[in-house]
Length: 237
Image 1 (cartoon, helix red, strand yellow):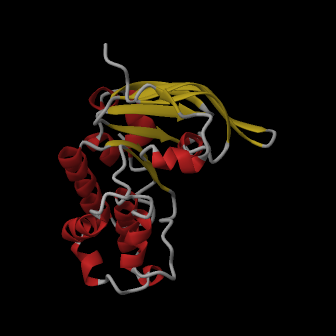
Image 2 (cartoon, rainbow, N blue to C red):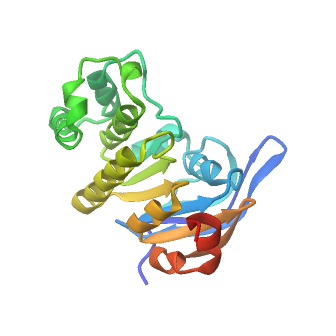
């Protein structure tokens, strides 16, 4: 069996004295889309923050077999991990293009301009608003910009926290279609935290359900769709 691209073992995370994750284990294969489901407060956002060393953690986090759990956040980013946080996370005073340039700041390959044009092609509205301040964009446009900016890193692992939050259903569907295309064309491994369980499971290969900081269920996304407990709790039927 091949080594998982992302392998998390015994991950614990806490905010001060408040323990949020209680030794969770999960893996994501290279090129896979994995989704984390769970109720509010289950530890989903904390899991993504723990992978980026943004919260105090214990346990092992390996990327392509290399331990990254003890590294500073900046080193993890340079290793190819991009995080799109809940609530967009753009620089509101900078223009769309300046945000994209910031996303490629650590790169030295000379292809930043080509990638900016590539994401303008995938998200045409960003190209139309390239000189507009990010803070003046609609919620859906800001989310597209946040994802495009993260992709400017050319990440090997893309972490997305509630990408559909606050978006209209049509915009959400379009956004998830774009993510599926990016995964297929670039082979970017993705770990997605999402409240829209039905949509998330429809695009994912693997799924994990968190309850009170522990993995309660896991399996292939198509298997969890058929699980009675998951259907009742997250799919509404």
